[in-house]
Amino acid sequence: MVGAYHFEKTTEEYLEQCAQQRPAVESLFRSTRNPLREFEASLRLTPHRFRSLAGAADAAASAGNRRSAQSYYRALMALAGTNGAGRPALARLTAWSQRQFATPRPPH
Image (cartoon, rainbow, N blue to C red; front, side, top):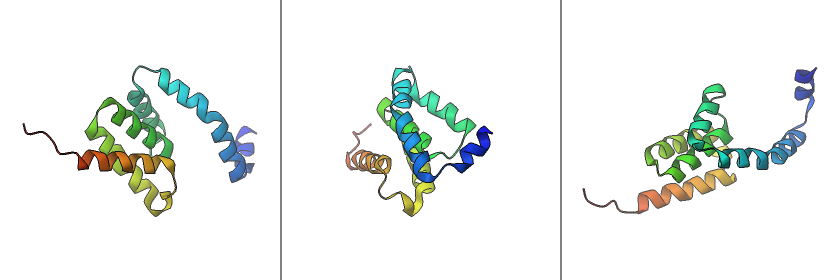
């Protein structure tokens, strides 16, 4: 019966439920020692989830792991395609990417 109820939800009900759960999920990941590892574990169970990819990209960027952040950002852009124009996660990651590529690298 739980599965049947899940499929009877409207899009609006589903989005409202996600919005209600978001603060709890965000606080959970803020309290972990390695949020990137948690997002990677989530992506192994449910690959190609928009919010998991966005969270992994944010976590990698926050940790200074530029290569992983770029990889997750590319996967997120490929997943969203042209449909993600108004999504805050994409706007935030696009701004991060532009800052990363605009900053000249110091010579080695």
